[in-house]
Length: 232
Length: 319
Image 1 (tube, each protein chain N blue to C red):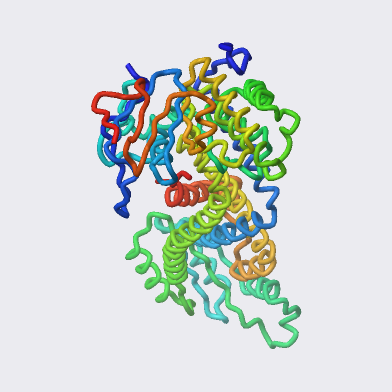
Image 2 (cartoon, rainbow over the protein chains, first blue to last red):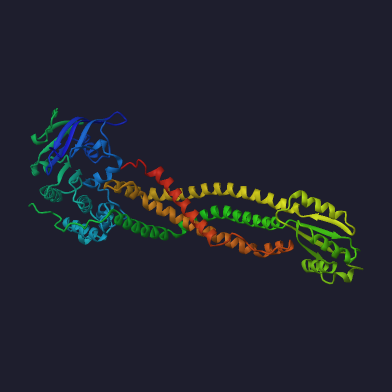
């Protein structure tokens, strides 16, 4: 059974815009996939639906066999604690230190402070920013801020990692470093979905692709085709 | 590479109650730091809540003391019998003995003309009053204290009988004063309830506004918290602590205000009560009263914070 399955998912916003149209696609556990498409193709909406920040207008989204649209509100925090999210504009807390930003998911999860320190520092060490743990995010470069965002997304050892244009502001070398980091997590069983429109980077990574065009599925590797998939 | 990229030992699992306690300790510490770092802003909120609590609190004290005064009078309803100025001292003694036999009377005190004059001089500060007068103008009087279960008709019947006695000039029934005090107590009681309700709403709104500002200042942080899986109660908790700290501080400010006002009014109040033969013995001004005031402040603070959190954090849009 696939870990994630979109079944005929449509998302229409209040203003009438249809961000996703009848998308059916699945992702195996431990896979790493590029979600690609032009700007406005529906990539961010796809990730927001998976994060349960929005609900589909039609269709179902299953994660580990559970229809997440039917998750009771009280179960949503626990669901999100198993997801790491990385964004192009980082969404770091500017008045909190780098360390506090990375420690946030652990504290939210109620971890003992001693373990928070170990885990957060290990995560910072992994992205090469341990020596900057006491600095504030605005004092870091864009690339460093992105690495802090990645450390925060991964510190909780999530089962699912979603990244929305994670290399959008980075130079090619740094972009490849970050992709290698994502690969390492995939290799230990984390399912990674990266929304990106950087064709060169995607080609260099040689990973399966799911492509959206105007909200519809326009290309999907064989392993992502699910029952009812129709590529337009 | 297939090793765990974090390569550290797993975290210790702890119980839910322990996590809850730990988080409360952390939030309490952070909230104290937050409030103390913005001391003057916090002091302003404390003062506003303090004023809102001090007014009904002060009125409650006034009402309690008026009620105590009326209780004191009500417990010994009295009649004062003024004898004629030229009445013989024997008349007073005879009447005292006669009244002492009455089953409705608890006790009788005879105040001679000389004692009345001495009392007059003491209260008015006019000494040597007789030097300017040919004779003592004050009559002897009898202070009659009735038993607590005396019915009004027995009260009035005795007053009527005494008016008919030889040597009696005037009989004053003290029920009138009692009725005034009781009426005043009723007004103050009702006013204190109305004010308490009005100012409680005020205190809640002051706290809600302050907490709302704190929420707005941390909105981005709250959105990220929700994104990484914070529960609503986790997000709300720091603001409830703000409300609690604002409310408790307001309660302490209210207690200080009441103490300050009483300190200012103590001397003139003592003089006023002294003129009615009463001593200043404030009732209700004790640790329990201050405790209730501070507790009420805390409760109103939490209510305000809950209001603000409900308005701003429910359906918080994430990113």
